[in-house]
Length: 352
Image (tube, rainbow, N blue to C red; front, side, top):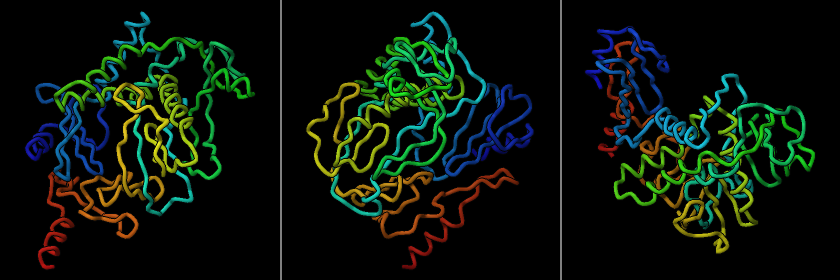
């Protein structure tokens, strides 16, 4: 990566930020918390990715590539391309919520993960987004509507506040809910795409191929926000509604494809098929807000790489690490430099 950065500095004008097409005489450098990404045309256009914590990169595809595959499946099913909406129409938000009374506590719990929540949701009815057929009214049978709404808190649960794009179904319309944009409802054009990639994810013996299949299903939905936020919203909303409808009095933490419960859930369908559940964890569960930890395992802390946490780090006692990268990018010289913070920690540990 040092050689590539040197080549870029010598031959291109470097811009810090996301790449723009065509690349021309520019090289784009994205310097994030854990990554340095360099995009330039060296023989062919390419993005080079370096992890500053030196953890092996697991990304096997890109959002654009996943979206291209999704577009092909869509056109094969419908005979036309995915309609593109370039104006801002809001962003759907995957469900993430917890029961307030268990915050900052450690309790014995069970985690039930749904097999490919997005793939399951992609097979549900979708909006035919070629034409907006109604505005500011309740959707009728055979229609799907969308509206921007603030997150509504459920008694006893806490959810991140914000204004999000929400789906309004005919059943919602019967209860008086109106929508800003209404489309005809159609059978999902994503069924073959979802089934094909879930089959690879489930049955492939190659770990890299399994990872790619999982990323194809997730990245394709994410990329839809840039092209058709209504289709993305439908996928996410079906997933959200399904998981929320399966919560009960023992549920304490919920996201789009997982329910954490203080009691076992024999009522949930357990198995390997699309949409069924598996028991992902059993043990002591702690969370602070939306960040969580099982036993003394490496926590899932939003915005902080797992590699930054040391062994036996306790979420309820220890301070959050400030920086655990091995390298940082010097944005002036465009060189990767050893992180002094990391060296100081290593010296301190040896002295101890």
